[in-house]
Length: 143
Image 1: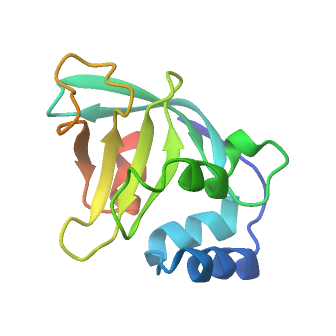
Image 2: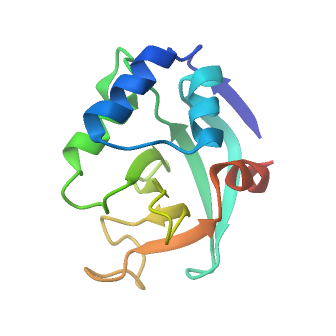
Image 3: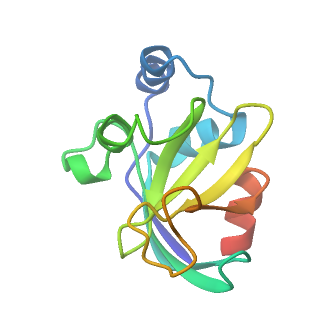
């Protein structure tokens, strides 16, 4: 797997995102944003056990990037009413499905969010699938 980072993240911008969204990002993910500010991912594949599918990861979103389609702020504003509190859409696959990071203390982890119901198993009440316990363990799965 190859990660083409978008540049260094700005801690002030990340803290503004936390304050504006009333969230506290997990340390491992916050550290990733500081080091990379999102990234394009080449040959990053992860397995979704509940779907029995391998999924290709395309993008990790960043902050304050020129293209709005690469921005955390854009996607989380766009889908904010559809995702749980204390969660963040952090990336997507080439088909447009999302990677969802939940940090609510109860369901913590990284999930595959099939909002467009691309898989037969997905429907209105069942379209979010567990991948890993933490962002760091998700990155490990990609390597």
